[in-house]
Image (cartoon, rainbow, N blue to C red):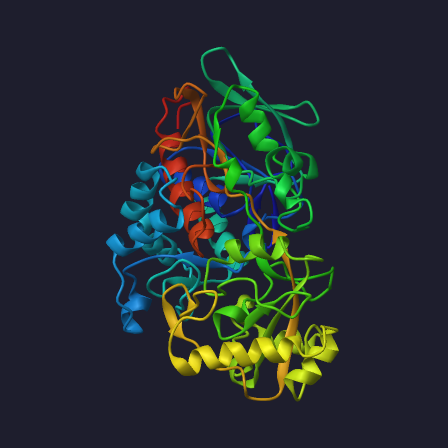
Length: 468
């Protein structure tokens, strides 16, 4: 065993393990630790040379209800409200059993993560939340804590070890074949390989509406696990609901970390190339992304003033407005007319749009797009009238695919007939059914922790042929 940053890294695979986990994002790391805590010899294989996947490219927010941090901030939230939000945002296309499973286990998973040293910052509201429940954390630190804890229990990880095929004996999965031809046998396999945001062929197959979207995500997110499971007859669901994320910088930029910014949730409006608004900016940022992709030229601008800039928070990537200014990613002017010229919008267009927006706020009712709040049902609109004024060129990016394998409440992968594929489990972005037709901020990281832990624990419960 060698050591990379203190992690339990192996250089050669064992012939046989109890639980074999594929993928080193949060779902995989949580599954590895849960399997190790259950007393199984567990091994995690990661195809790339580093841990993290899409987890470390995300905003690092987890959606939990009933936490200590919420109580300390005086935030009223409940599991019932969490469940209602999940179903409302998912337009009731979610699997209600998976929503119930998340709601039942989310607080225990939050406590489990904190027991292992994970720390959460200031809680804030975000898309799809009726109460502030976005819990920010350092995701890289989170994964390192879980992997080190798993290592202390005998678990191991291997980097640069891409899996190629699942092994199956006709009755159940028996392990994996690596790309180099080596095989690792296992009593159970957990797929936590992420989605396919970096695979243009799979996106063209399942999400042709994302043709003009930008692409980000973990480098390994090519849909490997999805294809390996589908080769064994695994069902898939929610593929029609693949959506992009709004707010990403419109071109490649060294200071774009993959999350973009959402100034719209702090007071900005979004305008198109005609200088016009095109959406209720308090809506889910996936829906804003869909609307933005339909605009002429695709690129849009988030327009805001000094009042919104003052709400910047460098600890929360999506609200790191000041950092964007430092990086030269914002346009700036002392007047709305000047900003209009900086962007290159038709003369008078942005000035009319801002004047109409401010007038609707002054009159106290919803505007022409029905906007009443800043984000979801939270926050009061503010006029855009305090110089200087800013614009962030914004595109829509596919960060994650939020659809995938059909699973039951034990996280067993189901085939097209709804029958479990023997000893095959899955968790995280590779799974479908949980989000439904929409996405609530914090539920990607949230479900990876919750369902990864459940998958690891249940995989460890399979009958083992090895003495431990």
